[in-house]
Amino acid sequence: MAKLFIQSMPTPEELQSSVSRIHEGVDSTPLYTNLLFMKVASELDNYLDGVLAPYNLSSGRFTLLHLLHNAPEGMMPSELSQRVGVTQATISGLLNSLEKAELVKRELHHKDARSFVIRLTDKGQTLIKELLPQWSPKLAAFWGQLSEHELTFIQGLLEKMIKNTAVLNQN
Figure 1 (cartoon, helix red, strand yellow):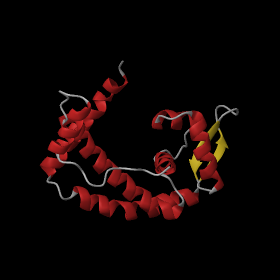
Figure 2 (cartoon, rainbow, N blue to C red):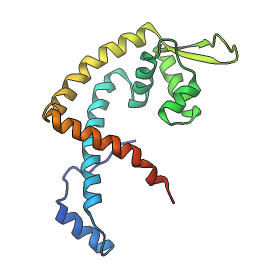
Figure 3 (cartoon, helix red, strand yellow):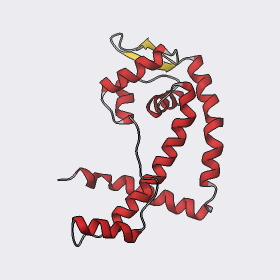
Figure 4 (tube, one colour):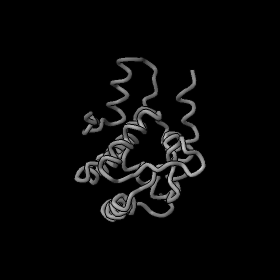
């Protein structure tokens, strides 16, 4: 599915005017802040997609490869599902495509022969090691435009925001 996002950001005043026509009295500051946040996230996501595309990887597949890279003992599909917050059916589909590409392998669980453990293959390990040097320098350049103080401040804000996402699911 194509990812769409506004390329020409409205000014805070334009957004306030637009929102006021729909619902009078609404403060557009949170909406504008969200647009800015989403714009940056969208650009970072698009950059990652561009790095991964030549390898026929999605960000979801890359995330699983990265998790498995950090778990040499392997992980069960249910663990992967919990770590990334998707259903086991979604994990199964992603793992099938990674297995077909010979990037992961399923092995019988050493304690429970009814279960599988997923591990990176040598090809998967090589791919992860190949991708990071392509991705990392541009990210370093992007975030390197900020001072250490600004980065620490943004990290603190983002951590606080992550903790507060529960409010989005409240009725």
